[in-house]
Length: 440
Image 1 (cartoon, rainbow, N blue to C red):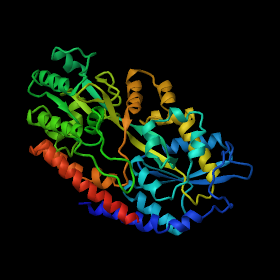
Image 2 (image 1 turned 120 degrees about the vertical axis):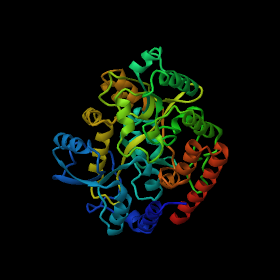
Image 3 (image 1 turned 90 degrees about the horizontal axis):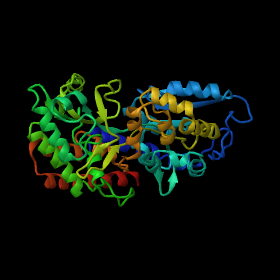
Image 4 (image 1 turned 180 degrees about the horizontal axis):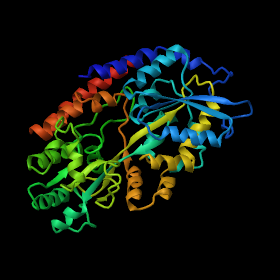
């Protein structure tokens, strides 16, 4: 069931990370470091100038500015940044391990944190992390996804969430109070019906793409108490048929069949980003989508710190970047100095905010929030969750994978929700078994 891409990723990791494990696990830096970061130093240590090599995903528009600021604050440390295509990131990292030439710090898609940590190729930073003065203020889901068997291997450095937005003018046109948004999924439908009744060119609800998927659908299931996986490990199983997740996709099926959603919400029906343009043009009443979709349109929309479930609880999907120090880093102490700065420093948090990211220190991010709109963006992370599985891509992200295929069959083709999600769960369990079997 895994796509060729996901199979290649797993195979590359199995071949590159796992098979090179003994070598990397025993490797040490050129300075004789055993891989411990110690307490780190803020000035680059007692020796001469150190040059750190850092990898980040291309499209991460905050990293360059952050590294410039870090260098100014740490005269003894220079940083060489390499931007790596997200599609090639894991394969390139595996190749660097095979070659014995890993970067000093990697900044990567947060969903890959469990897979990288499970491979034993990242430095255990538990002691240093727990000693951080702001450790308890870091986004909980970001800590959880970087932790395997109570050991921390990566920390969140730049985050985003998902939220409910609504068009204030359409609320008024429908006789609704723009300061009183819907609080449950039942109210979302009720309000959407009233808004859509205001005009032929108005749609009541939209997800701006990704209907029923990670950013838009999972939060409603989590808000109602659902899970997607059991604890990570060889015995992990998917729980896609959790009654709350089944109820979530059934709700979307009802919204779609009731004609309350944009046609562009159907997969592959919005190549020109028309759905977003319609919303910005004031033609959509209520939206479940990513936190940055309506940045700059604060006067037009209201926002909530999350997405509601059936009972009014809010939840959000946690996206963004995680950072870690690979085993074999030549400068682990300086790499920790950089990682500590990224998760703790106010300047790093400010640059994150300017680039559209949310700083991992939620208390600091909240202090920097200028208004209710910004405060709600930060608040969405306090209720943010992220499924933890080494088979995340194959089971959820892959457009041909079990979650995407079965949930879309329910929502857009009228398939039975319970039957389809049970089928998705069974397919996902096989992919999880396959992933662990390839890892050994």
